[in-house]
Image (cartoon, rainbow, N blue to C red; front, side, top):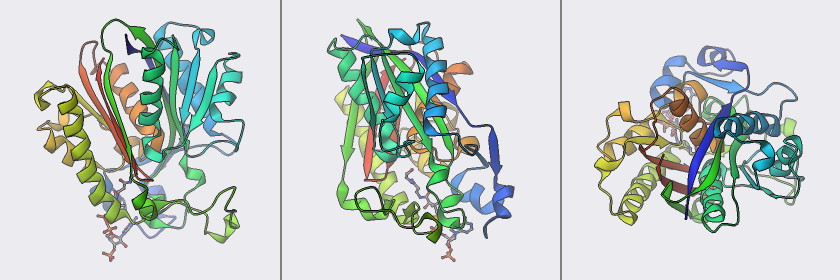
Length: 321
Ligand code: UT7
């Protein structure tokens, strides 16, 4: 038994923050942001709009696309680094809003790889027959944990949510998922405080995402190159078999490096970084949904999804759509 993607969805908050808006907030330029990252604009959650709000909208869109009712869902996992509250987890929050009772529902924190981890786990539940319809979400309100006076990071991130519904199938479907981590690199990209360690005063400007961008960049390029090889080898496939690359949308230069490694022209790479910025766990499922809904990705296409983020964590999935 395999799992296959039955439907996809996404939701982006209404407010758009452009590079030109950021020029008025920190010492930066549209030109610097565009040439170094590929980002032109990003969406930012409204005051009071939470990760669960975004996740619910994306989930409903994916459930509609799958042609099922919310109550058909029997497994919910939400990858997020920015949950509404410590608990109930965002999975439970959207379970309640969707009117579902009793099924497995949990949140999972693997930074930008959160959706890849969630997909890998959900795939195993569907394959084993334990779940018939799994809702897999990546959702973030990263805008809440970046310092809006730190130009190194605030220009990079955005908010949003993406979702897929998985269902059982006789043929793949998801051919393989690959999940990795190396805590050795924890100090290159991190949020310094939390419930157990204690929060600093948020107004002190100490509680925000901190990143040694250039060092993260180098490890990301190398690591994503390796996971692409691992994914192809595991399936005895040549890189020419991939129809679409759906990468984590952190930086256009990282995406181009992975595309070069696969000998893929950029027309076969789904790019949303210009419009979404880096939305962490939401980036891959939103990019997937964009290309499914605009008709580029068709049933039968071979997809390679990959992500890399804080931890470090990284993951990939090879999918016959
Ligand atoms: O999603 C999780 C994984 N995250 C990533 O994959 C992010 C990986 N890293 C990156 O995408 C890139 O490293 C960045 C976009 C963050 C930075 O690009 P870079 O080419 O690595 O630049 P840099 O950090 O080496 O900085 C170059 C210069 C510095 O000035 P000096 O020291 O050369 O005078 C920075 O101070 O650019 C300066 N700078 C800026 N200038 C204008 C840094 N941020 C800005 C800014 N506007 N927003």
